[in-house]
Length: 336
Image 1: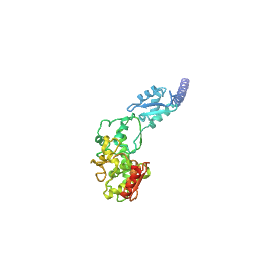
Image 2: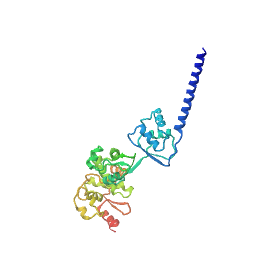
Image 3: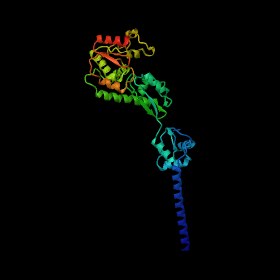
Image 4: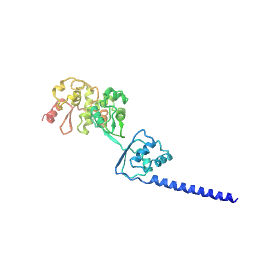
């Protein structure tokens, strides 16, 4: 009996010791995972490479001086069920962070976003140059032809010009240029669908693509934003009447890299597929990336009787309903 009582006391002491030990261990772990690690400097940038496992990521974070040890971070990740939830990418910290805060940060994926901007009026060659020169982009299209790029992004068009919506695109470091082009292409397609569905009746446009071509001309012809819808109205009136569009930007686009900045009379008389002084109707493709305002103007032009416009030299355009008044305006604003 005495032996049993003594054994019972020893078991109680053992369980009490284990319980106290567990409490101390939990407290120690709690303190460990909630104690902020001092950053070497701020802002502190680091990268989580794709394809790493929890052990390699933990080792990297210890090497980057963001964790006191590997095993506690692994244990914490497994306890919270986050062992496969850490997102690769480029991160930046601006203040000291605890292991728990760091884990939540990496699981949430607060990746530092890089950006690239496509400008209204850019040609596809200018867009490609911006992509190729961006240091945070993986260049999968660098040596591909225009047609190969269109195939990669799932585009059905034969020419890439004008197909990408001009905007600022944010992306994690090492994103593929293909993914950025896909986003820009689908964004343009969405805006075209919306504009086409809300277009004015009886427009001389057979498709969304023809509207895109017209919008690209409006983009290149417009000096002042408020003139867009009027320029669109003039071009629509000319298309309705079967008049030649006679716009310089299409001719310049057709000349291509040989254009030296000076449009000559001979250029306007030389036949090529983008010379709207010689050929009727729209050119075969867009000549640049139009912005949203130009797209909206193309599908909803101003109601006007004007058939001519000329740049005043201050960004604005002067509009005329007949050739006589137009010639006077040309003499007033350009020849003088």
